[in-house]
Structure formats: structure tokens, C-alpha cells
Amino acid sequence: MDQLIALLAELVEIESVTGSEAEIRFPEHIYALLEQKPYFKQCPEHLQLHPLQDGRQLLTALVKKTDKKETIILLSHFDVVGTEDFGIFQHLATKVHDLTAAYKRGDAELPASVTSEIQQGEWLFGRGTMDMKAGLAIHLSMLERAMDDAFDGNILLLTVPDEEVNSAGMLRALEVLQQLQATEGLLYKLCMNGEPVFSKYPGDTRNYLYSGSIGKVLPGFFCYGKETHVGEPFGGLNANLMISYLSQELELQESFIEEVDGEVTPPPVSLMLRDLKETYSVQTPVSAVTMYNVLFLEQSIHDINVKLKQAMDRAANKIADHYEQKAKLAAAKTNAAHPTAFTIKTMFYEELYAHAVSRYGQGEVERRQNRLVTTRTEGDRDFSTKLVKELVSMCHDLAPVIVLFYSPPFYPAVSSSKDPYIQRLIRDIQVKAKQNFDEELTQVQFFPGLSDSSFIGKPTSKTVILDLLSNMPLQEKGFTLPADLMEGLQMPILHLGPYGKDAHQWTERLEVTYSFGKLPDLIESAIVFALRT
Figure 1 (cartoon, rainbow, N blue to C red):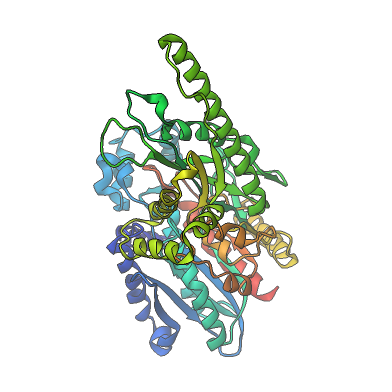
Figure 2 (figure 1 turned 60 degrees about the horizontal axis):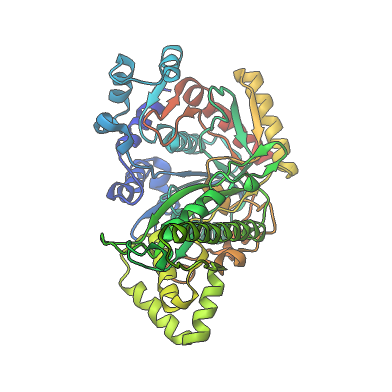
């Protein structure tokens, strides 16, 4: 346990925030740790860094038995979210022992529940302790056991960057896994993800293992109104008014909640909502954008599109009614005539694109979009919005209009719960956990925190990816989904990871007694079961 704690502290101290220089350095550090091992000195070709197009790297480490094809993949990510939420303790956010000591001394006003847990158990605090460097540390210990001939099969450690943003690391890993499968003659039996346990509700103390992972789409809505001077508010339509009604139709909208076998998705929440005016003026905002986190279990993209379109149509009708009602009331007070009707159009990005092509030709549309690509400085979300804005400005006679589009990331919902192999494996693990460690492990079908398992497991619905990509401005403009690789590499998945609390919060922490005291031996048993089943 002490070795794992020391390793975790070492890994956490490398502040590998997504997109940072430390994220680039992190896999090089792991490489340096592993290349000193006798196995990798003897088989250096089994330890590799694989570059992404943007300069980041993922790492694979294969411990292979010469007479075996059966292989277990141990999957993790090493990027973390930022540390700004730690406030005055930000300088300690990656110093596990110092931060834990400060919290135990009472230097911070912790929530009562956190204070109580500190007094009752052994916890380590810091960014990445729970999500998910503890899982990586345990996987590295499994690699050590594989080198000591603990398993009757092959162990492939795969750790990737960018899970917290676009999963670019995992999408690149699909190519790597296919190459290793061919060159090394591997048969992938199982992908075991080391993501941590997530509590289902405040005060939840149960321990879970997951046989799937939840799906996610990120729909955006571009609202384009009609500009006017603030002294003549009824001469136009404010995009901020439009987006406010759209928010009412989407934020926490219960029609998007999906239930499958007692597991329930949360409703949509806005991750971005703003007008697109770049400078102050007394002209009303003509454009605004919002993006929503929409999670799903078995719904298809088509099903989600139908609900999103219905929400847009309801919002459009309410915007028009609001404007007409206010215009009439203002006219009655001023004895002046006001415009009293707006028809707000709603459309998908692919419809907008087709409209622009029909008017200006494919060549002109591509020329304008390619010009934006060559001068791009924005991230995926903002650049998606920019591509939509360019098309709307070309077709501004469509105004007022609301355009639905999609931005990365996209996570398919996947599940292995109905796979007999996984069903037997879970039963064996649960029995082992109870008999040897007095631990009750509750099976959950969908890991709720989003994970890279989405790109390697079996999808739960006949989701037509084209329904998503046809409305994604970034498709073929810097973002692609390797659908053929995703389909070709589908395999059973299982999440068995450490226990912690408050991922992405300043109180993020790992419970040590189970995570480093019991879980490593349990994961070793799970690998043994998985290889023999």
C-alpha cells in the first residue's frame, strides 16, 4: 500500500491538465519508469509512445507471453481538469501529502460530510487522486505482477491524454490497438477501465463495478435575430431574447430523461450560453449561442434530434408570442404603430448548409469555410459556432432563425451487461470480493462519468453516426470519428476502479483502505478470471 501511495503522489505532482505542457511530459515520465524494468530492457519494442497529431502522446506497455494470444487491456487516462477551484490552496492541489495534512489540520472550512469522513477513514486529497491517477497507479502495479508471471495471458497497459475534453487520445489509440493486434498477434478478450467509483447520491457509501458507459452528445443552438438600435427595440429581434426562451425549453427538460432497468440519466444542462457581440454598442445583439450536455443510454441520435427540434419549435413559438404581446402593449402606451409579427425559423445545420450551397454553390461555401480553417485559433466549440455563423451570415435573409448543430465531444453509450462472458466474470468478482475482502460490489450497467470505454465497447442502440456527423460543422474540418475502427475493435468492457469522492472539485479525494489495500488483489483476481473464462 505504501508503494502505491508514493506512486500516486508522484503521478499527481505532475500537473497534467488537459492541453498543458505537463500533459505532454506525463507519458514520458511513465515511459522512464517502465524502461528501467528488466522485462522492457529485454523487450523494448513492447513499450511505446504513440504521437497524436497535436504533439501529445499516449503510451502502451505490453507484457506478453510467447505462447498466448489472449490479452486484457488496462485502460486509463492521465489528463486532469484544472486546479483553479482549489482557491487559496491551489498551490497545494497537486501536493497530495501537504494538501491532505492541511485539510486534516482544519486549515480549510470543509463541508461537514468531508470533515466527518476524514475523521473516520484514510483519505488522500488532490487533483487527480480520484480521477484517475489512482486507477493508473494500480494498473502499473498489475503490469509489475504480469512481469512476475502472475497471469496466464497478456497484459496491455494503455494510458491516454485528453479524456477530459475530446478523447483525442482514445480515438488515436484505436489505430494503435489495431496495429498491435496485427503485429503481435493479440486476441483482445476484455478492456478493463480503472475509472473510479461514482456515488449515486450524497452520502452513498456503496461500491460499484460497471459493465458499460453512458453516452453523450453536445448539441449547440445558434440564434440569429435582427439588429436594431436600443431606442427602437421593436425594429428588430434581440438574440438574447431568443436564447432565453430556448434555455427554458431545454434546461432540466424532463422529456430527455431516459430510464433503462432502473438507471436514469440526468436532464440536459447548459454548458455555454452567450451572445456573440465582441464590443459594446447600443445595437442589440444579433446572434447568440448555447450548448447543452445531453446524456443518453439507449436512445438513437435520431430520437434525440426529434426532441431537440420539438424544443426549438416550442421556443420559436413562444418568442414570437412574446414579441407580439409586448409590441401591442407598447403601441397602446405610445399611440404608435409597431411591427407585431415575427416568424422564427428552426432548422438543422445540414439544412442550412444545403441552403447556402443552393444559393452560392459548393465551391464558394467550401472556399469560405476553408479560409476560416486556415486562420483558426479557436477551440472546437467556438470554431463550430464560427462555421455556423459564416453560413448564416451568407444567408441572413433566413433571419430570424435558430440552427441546431453538434460539436465534439461525442460518446456512444455502450454496455456489455448482456454478454454471458461479462455476466460470469462479474459473478466471480462479486463472490471473490465478499469472501476475501468482505466487500459488496453492486453492478451498474452504465458508468455515469463518461469514459473512453465508449469508443471500444458495444453500442447499446443502432445509433446512426451519420445522423450526428451530418449536423457537425467540424466534420472533415479537423474532427473525425473513425467509425470503422470503433466497429472493428468492439470488445467486452468492465469498469473496476478505486473508491473516491468529489471528482472535479476542490475536495477531490481517494479512500485509501479499499482502493490500495483491497482493490489491487481484487483486480488481479479479476484478470485471472477474465483470462480463464
